[in-house]
Amino acid sequence: MSRLVQPDCSENVDGEAVEQWIKGDSTLECCEVLSDDDIVPRVTCGSEETRNFEECPESDEENLVTHQKLSHGDALVHTEALLNYLGPEDESTPAEKMILRNLRSIIRRRVNEKQKQTSNLSFFTKQ
Image 1 (cartoon, rainbow, N blue to C red):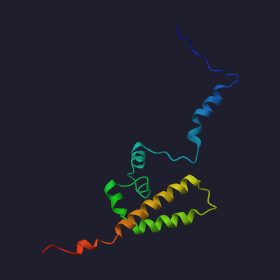
Image 2: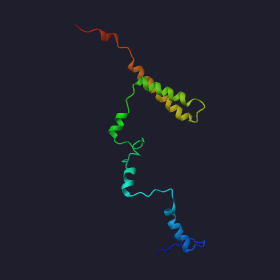
Image 3: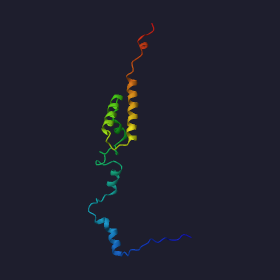
């Protein structure tokens, strides 16, 4: 048979103190009382106030439009700039810098692949 557990109420609290604690939220001046109609758009990114935040894009399509595809050369420039920004005195960990260096190597490889000279054989055609 289960036993009802009574909380330890070592502190004597009168009914007036309980009522004051319950009504405490209603006396706060810092709180704005919102209806369900006010809360739902704010939570679902429907209000004008929340649309400006990145974590709350209006739609996936619009989010894709705002991001332009970078060329490999631009990506390399930005990665180098990020590594320079971090510098030796930065609080970032060596592991984070190593990840960026690995990304830089991958991007450099892609830049070099795009810049490879075409083969001499491609200039000759069979007649």
